[in-house]
Image (tube, rainbow, N blue to C red):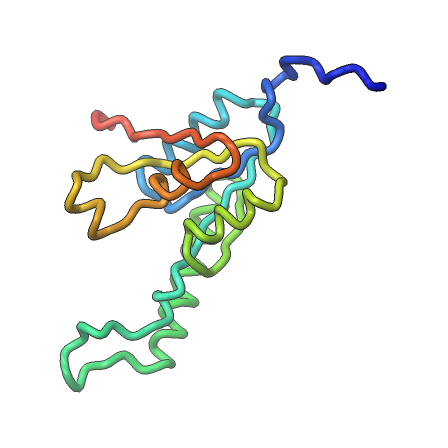
Amino acid sequence: MRPPPPAHAPNGPFRRILVMMNFSPSARAALAAARRAFPHARLDVLHVVPVEANAASPLAPAGRGLTSAVLVERDRHWTHEAAARLAELGGGEIVRGDAGDVALERLREGRYDLVVVGASALGGVERLLLGSVATRLLRRSPVPVLTVLADPEG
């Protein structure tokens, strides 16, 4: 019989951490907080490009719809910009999909001990209209969730 693991490793129980990155002030604050709080943990930074980024808007004026070529070019530009921003932050991964779904799928695979996400300070109606990855993770994550708000002072 093996002895139980030590109660506190250098990072506590958190050795591998998923950090969700949408480049908002709160997401950047979340990454900074994770780096400060868990200096010895492996941080995997993940940016998710919404699938809708490849779809034409149903709200586009008649006769002004976006062609597939324009959408492909816009997606290429956004992905290139996201890659540059991730490089400025020290690296990360870009995937396509729904941010909440992608995060939950990765967390359920058991590779992470913690997920860190920036949280917005939206009110009730805005939250219902916009949704919230942080709220979904808080409700459904199989691992602890650390939410971080950006400092309103800057």
